[in-house]
Image 1 (cartoon, rainbow, N blue to C red):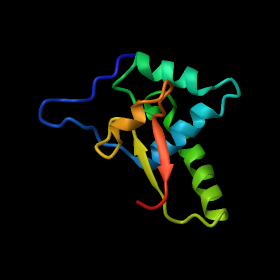
Image 2 (cartoon, rainbow, N blue to C red):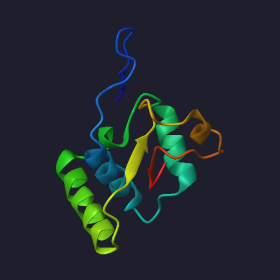
Image 3 (tube, rainbow, N blue to C red):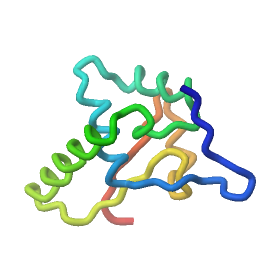
Image 4 (spheres, one colour):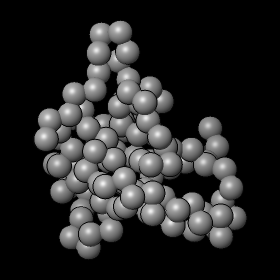
Length: 107
């Protein structure tokens, strides 16, 4: 599967943080998943995002689970950065095995 998202006019694609949370966590639900394997997987499809590899209903189910866990832990406000979005810092690509999504609180 080849994923081509960017254009000259709009360099970023539309991202649903909720869906990407679910998709990324779904990818991590495989016990054999490692940072190295995920980084290699995404390196082979550099224009992809987690939801490109997970069925939408599976991503939605995982997103519900994640947000419920956050709420149960008292986390009501958080942000998410997805590789390819404008808020994703380029420095997050520096590690040997960069992450595609990262959650954060605060600025």
